[in-house]
Length: 184
Image 1: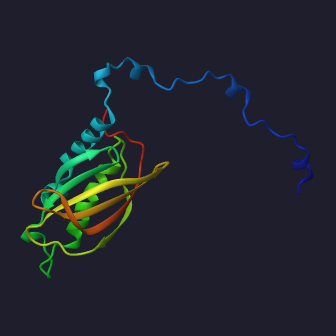
Image 2 (image 1 turned 180 degrees about the vertical axis):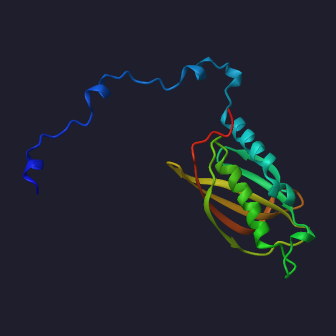
Image 3 (image 1 turned 60 degrees about the horizontal axis):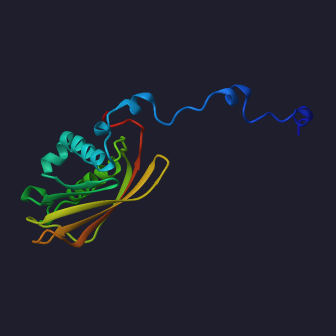
């Protein structure tokens, strides 16, 4: 060990300039001046985030993916399997099912009004989708730590009464927020 290092006095954790600075307010003045009706609640932020994202999502439009519901940390989308979505085995292509699940995941992880792109996902196919199936993808937040989010999505066939049937795929997505607000 270096002898000079051992003889140096310990440096304070906070310097004098930092200690003298006044505490910053939690809310900035612009936010405090906004009228109460302009401040969005969590459900409204989730709805606006989903509408903004899906309005620009050309892949979702091409596949006929429709928003069914959204809430902070979760959401549901639906899609009807068309003949042009099947593979060589006459079942719904796995990439189409993954896209449906990924869309529900994107709605959930971006529902707080901050851009949160996917960092990765895994999907397990349990049984095939078929032409004419009405599919539902339901996303639920499992954990958020710092900038990382973990979301599960279940893809199932909708029953005629509109309730989910048995799952046909399970998806786990990981997101990473980048700190950019989706809207003002």
